[in-house]
Image 1 (tube, one colour):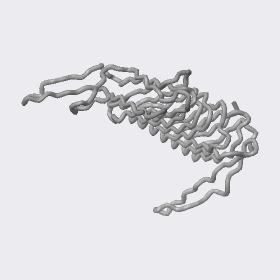
Image 2 (cartoon, helix red, strand yellow):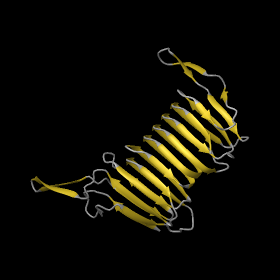
Image 3 (tube, one colour):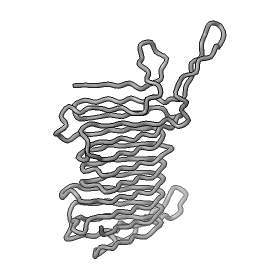
Image 4 (cartoon, helix red, strand yellow):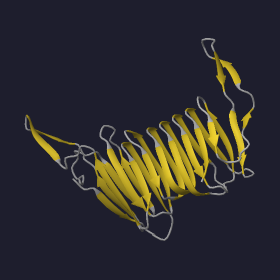
Length: 265
């Protein structure tokens, strides 16, 4: 079963436009099975909350939206139609729900409520942050110019941003799933259950690593030395490795400018 709700402002005949609407409820084909949410927002915040519900609720707010279109006489028999509602497309196929905002010039903040047992692929590019709360599942998220926060989650997480902190707190960890956390400018702060079994591989180009676990941290090999095209020496630091509770799947943690924190929950 495929359902498609178009929330788009386009100048094409036959396009369905929904003006001023802020909430859309999307039913799942089989509410008893695990679903998946995919959010791709080009500009603005994305928040996903796991709550006791059997559908998916999408709420959005276009920053500066006045709730309608503006029609002006442009002369020569032409009308100029303008508005500041970004294009937003919401679609579902079975138990997979997609929310796509393609407008790079207008910020739109998206809040989605899903069942707690849900898998996520969530991204935004600029003008906002990613927040994920109370989700049990496989989570993949990215942000280019903003922070990523995941609170009270279970399962596994892959998180990547270019400018911003990454902070995640876990209720439980998937036993055999690797995880990865990477930012260029920002700190990485992880809170894990005390029983977590993992093999860490960590690197901070301009920062330190802190942990409240009893973990034997070692630098993997010696620092490498290379020369760039101008003949200047460049030091490439080695990775810091360590096993937690005897080791397990690899948790890769990397920041170029910031500290790393591994906390016991």
